[in-house]
Length: 163
Image 1 (cartoon, rainbow, N blue to C red):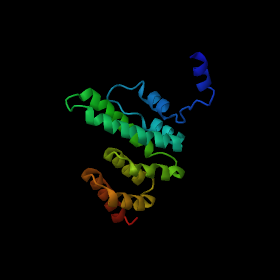
Image 2 (image 1 turned 120 degrees about the horizontal axis):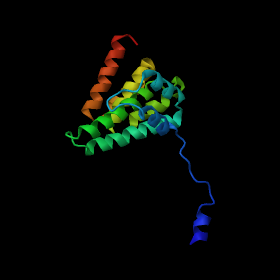
Image 3 (image 1 turned 90 degrees about the vertical axis):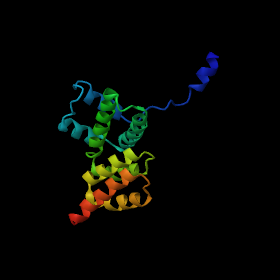
Image 4 (image 1 turned 180 degrees about the horizontal axis):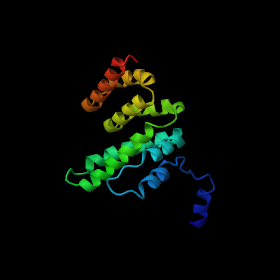
């Protein structure tokens, strides 16, 4: 049995490629329960994000959306913590380097409507002009009313500003 386990472990063991969880944990660890992460810290985390961290943020938002369905509205503590992490991940996505715009835009294909909302707003914050074609395509396939409304509002704001 030990030899078999040794044999199985000879290949490379996959390591996490994203440092996002550690960055988020560090940002939240010293905060009081309802406090927000300082803007400078959010910007610093966003600046450190690459494609792996962006993909991890989108996957994490998906997980939080699933958890949100399981949390009862009366459980304010759990709900507040979920919303706090969602808010931080959203803020981070709004501040990633522009060269990773397409990695953020990939989140519009998430199976979770809450994630698609966060991604749509992050794209708007990153580069409203570049977001337009992505948001139009996402809106054409959107089946959730809330996510669709956010996309319509984001598109309308961009178009009214002449972007």
